[in-house]
Image (cartoon, rainbow, N blue to C red; front, side, top):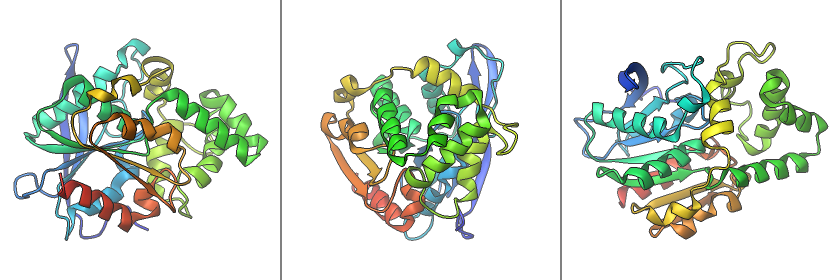
Amino acid sequence: MSATSPDATFTEGHVPYVVNGETLKTYYKLFGSLEDSTKRPLVVLHGGPGMSHDYLLPISDLSLAPHLRPVLFYDQIGSGKSTHLREKPKEFFTIDLFVNELMNLISHLKIKEYDLLGHSWGGMLAAETEVRLHPEGLKSMIVTNSLSQTKLWGMSTMQLVGALGDPSINAGMAAGFSDPVNYRAALEKLHAVHGCRVSPVPKEITFGVLDQILGDKETGEGGDPTVSINMFTGAIAGWSIEERLHEVTVPTFVINGRYDMAQDFVCKAYFWEVTKAKWYTFSESSHTPMWEEREKYMKVVNEWLDHI
């Protein structure tokens, strides 16, 4: 299974992003045309924090007939093909850093109206962007396989790991970034059930989710966990948006999967607390329905966007 159709064409580049007088670079990949399309572009926010856009590339299907919608991917600062920030202190990594990067990208590409699709951490980022800024051009949000509190995500993960009954997963998860090889092995076992149930695992998921942060499978070398470690122990430690969701003014589409790490109790607040919200659960999917039920995912997402 290929991440992108052979018919899909894209342009790519880097956008300058100035932070505290330092010019960083945000990498982007655009499928379709911003100038020629009559449809609003869909801006896709990847998870992690610290992963890359690659594992979400099936969403580029929306740029093809019959949908013909521009789809913009990018690598958040500190990950993928954007500027890496290994030397930065924890205090540098704030939610505002990523909110401002997103708005800078949209402004640089002269996008006037758009929709956001945020996956996992990307859903958190989309929601934070809306409640902090209420961007004039934002017409709707798709919060896919995401969470309203990091506490709930932790509870869900512990519950699912416990149900698997594999001591090696418990040990690897407990070791975390201090033992990247065993942590990765544990995540691979967990993800096979609750991350992506496609077999074999698509190479784009292996690359975009695991290689980016944890490095080589055998040695643990080559990854960059800087963003992930600093955000989870800093800006999003104890994070919650539930008490602010009533401030969301754009229509919001909540998506999760039957076997998702984002179980219903992890994401339900987006549906119950946002004034204009819809919720859809993919019955054969876990955390990546854009792979697991690809055609159906595109149909459901496109129908939402067409009716906004």
